[in-house]
Length: 236
Image (cartoon, rainbow, N blue to C red):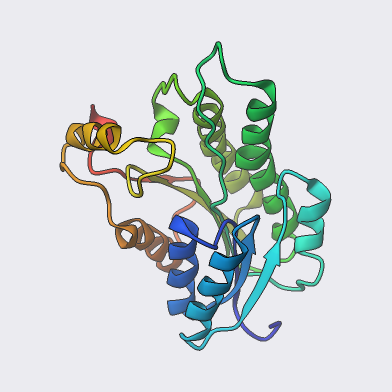
């Protein structure tokens, strides 16, 4: 793949990670498709990307393990885009959240993007792009998800640090989605309650989040910024 443009998307098997991978494939990139445990979904996503005429390297890795991050990138000589989409969102308030879940969340949501940026930047030429997927919750005080909220707030800070350190060769930005896809840890009733609070009164469509990535691919004069796509949720 050294003669073609290549993008690494973490957590690309399903949900928003899959949307980002397909968006990049439609934009002409071959995909290094990372997944952790969703092997069947990864195969399905690979088939969809290949149907678009793009090449795919599918690779399993536990990104909380630095050695597996190194292994993920071991055969890659050149990379154009990195999208840090993989994330862990454990529930539990200050009293109940376990130290294991605190560490796992910070390791995947913050340390892994740092280590991936560190390694991938060495494989990027002029014009490289790193996009960290944060969350509108980074600017909130979500007491049910302390480790997740802290990790995403820190990732937005890291985005600015990386942007300054890697300029002008590589741009680094973040996308902060609002409510998009209901997760297993949120009941249907709670999901509807949250959506009713959003000024636009609906969740985002996946393609509306992906359009922020398309914008960052095209506009080469943006770095160190977080693009919030939340239907106005950050206003309340």
